[in-house]
Length: 431
Image 1 (cartoon, rainbow, N blue to C red):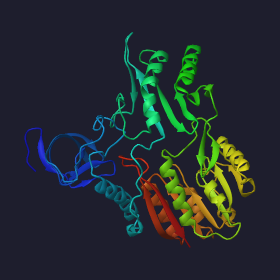
Image 2 (cartoon, rainbow, N blue to C red; image 1 turned 60 degrees about the vertical axis):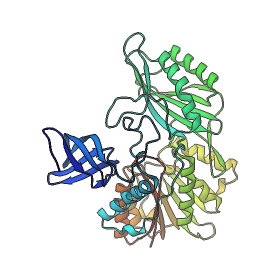
Image 3 (cartoon, helix red, strand yellow; image 1 turned 180 degrees about the vertical axis):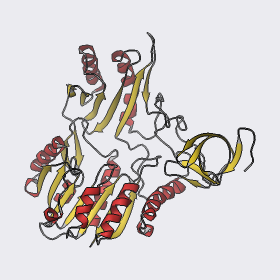
Image 4 (cartoon, rainbow, N blue to C red; image 1 turned 90 degrees about the vertical axis):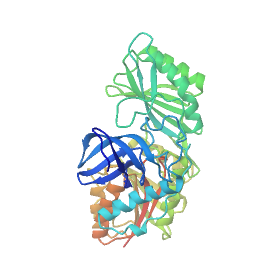
């Protein structure tokens, strides 16, 4: 390691879960954003980070063979992506290694992890962006993702991860936000592409004023949006304009989309995960009973019910469950699906309640399903399928199931959030 007064050269040893290059030093790990394993880099040390220290990448002196030219001009500044500079094969290996490492930290067998299932880069049908109107009478309006580890907004002019319809809306959306935001004011916008048009949810501190609702209603008509809604802590979600009720298609069934309801970010990833859930469930007995926990709009409920199983869908979001129940009725699956509104973190299904199910599927938020898996570990359910967006909490929950007598048979990562360190996965457990 060569040093100068405030800069030094160092070789990167590995790639961290956030996409930072990491050099292992005697003083702990040094985290270097945008650097890759094997590279000799010139860095300037920065603030402490955990047990190590962050550093600013000044120059790549000897690039790795896996380094490629990022496809987006915003890469490096925008925090939406962290790994556009990594060649595809190395990138997919890195994502698999994130899952393997998480399992091994819990003393579980990482060899059960499959290769990563890729998805197309421009597949994000759902994205949450931030907007702010800069101060001054003619202040610009910035719209985009936040910069890396910052509240600064990177003004988006292109994006390689969004679906084309969402990207095409960015410029006209920026224009209307310039009309409705006060100088220094900001909001978040959630864009969701549906088969009948884009659904737009604006989240701000205060309820909308008449001028704002009028401008957004005109924007919805001009841009042929399906719906515009406004959310605030004071008033909740308020409708602004609706040209057509937005719905999404799940396993061939149209399901109404409540404003802000959880939805997988990529339709391609959703289909891959649903297929993996079905594979891991294996052959169920005729009219076998399956509990789908954290069911949402029925991403897995509907494909399971279509295969003649009886599914009990449980989630805390009542609006989503109502939409699911209505959709199953319209699709002729009503007799196979029941729903229950229940906060599973506070009131998990107890081991005795689970005794009548042949299998359980659960897809919790990033915090995992600690209480749910404790009850599963004490139950007699023969097969469990876990879906997770957080390998660390999944591995923790998997260890609980293994300690309770389950075998972790298979884990398949799915690259839903392309060019990021976020990993989705589907895993199968059996008694």
